[in-house]
Structure formats: structure tokens, C-alpha cells
Amino acid sequence: MDWRVFAQQMATMARDLLAQDSVDATLERITGSATELVEGCDAAGVLILRGERVESLAPTDRLVVDSDQLQGRLQEGPCFDAARTHFRERVFRIADFAAEHQRWPSYAPPARELGLGSMMGFLLFTEDEDLGALNLYSRRPGAFTEVSETAGWLLASHAAVAFSSARTHAQMEQAVATRHVIGEAMGILMGSHRLTQDQAFDVLRRYSQENNVKLREVARQVCEKGSLS
Image (cartoon, rainbow, N blue to C red):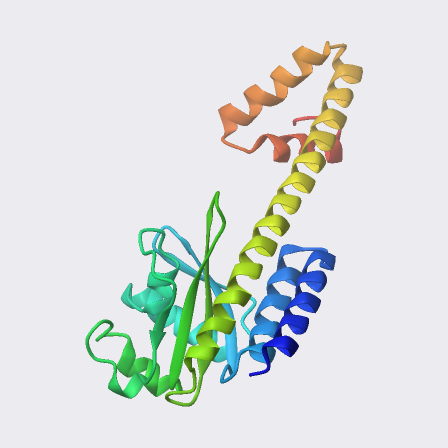
């Protein structure tokens, strides 16, 4: 690999990641870059865990989804381990699925039947949070070299920062939108029932608690219907 060319490609990717307008677009750029920049990579995806449930994000191939679902059912596998916060290995790697029988004995044989030859999984993390795992797959055994691993690790480091930034931005946008709809709902209640600002908010809050409905959904109902009924 020409590391000078790789560095230029990584710099271009980093700029592109900052230009994406959503979490989904950011992740799709990350996984697409993995197949372009990491030698031997045929498919890529991001795996996150919600409790013990596996979720596949931005898969470039159906193979990624099938592998993630298999690991979720078995609660075993390199990508599953890479996404779990109590594992701190730099990379989880299977050089040849046909020869892997020790660490992931339940996962490796059926994964080989899916068409997997080799894979690498990298934990996505920042100083503040663990985000999931970036997983790279090849249909060929032995496709990933030490150079591939280094390239994957560098890409995963950039990916983690971009993923975290995109999530934070999305959360801030949602918070602003939520505050706006709550404020609009309070204004409707204040005008129709001659309530103070505090009283209007208290009406929304009580309805939310008593009916087990999120406050923003209660506010949206008021904005759409003009009342809580």
C-alpha cells in the first residue's frame, strides 16, 4: 500500500464526513469508504447493541446484515464482541472462517455457509462514549493483512469521531425541535384556557405522566388538534 496516497484518501474522507447532513449519511460514507480504502474488504457495516439486541447500520451488502443477525441470535461472534464495551482489543479478527473453531465455535461454521471468508471488527469509541463496531468482511479466506488491519484501525478512529459528532448534532436538532413544539403547545393552551406559562407547562407534564406518553408527543397533539382531547 502507498501510505501517502492512503493519507490523502483519508483526508478526503474526513472532510466528506464533516459535510454529511445526517447520522445515516455519515455512516454510509464510513462503510463505503471501508470497501474502497481497506485492501481485501468486500463489505462493511456498523453494528450497535441495544441491550442484547443487534442492530445493523449502513451495511454495504446483505452479507453484513445476515452475519449481524446470526451473531445476535447466537450472542456470539467477533462483531458482537467488538461492540461490547468490556472488551478492549484493538481488533477482532478471523483470518479464515473455515479454520476458526475455538473462540467463536457456534458462529464460525454457519458464517462460512453465508459466504464469509475472513473479517475484522473494530470498536468505535471516543474518550466519552462507546458507539458500536465497524466490521469489515471478505469472501476470501486470508484476505486481510497487517496492512489491512492498520488501515482499518485508522479508518475506525476517524469514523468514531465523525459518528459521535453526527449523533450529537442530531440530538441537538431534536432538542431544539422538541422545545419549539412544546413552546407552541403551551401558547395554544395559554390562549384557549387563559393559563400562565407555568400552568400550561404543568398541564402538558401531568398529561404526559398520567398517560405514559412522551412530552413532545403530547405537545405535538396539542399543536395538531388545538387541545389535549
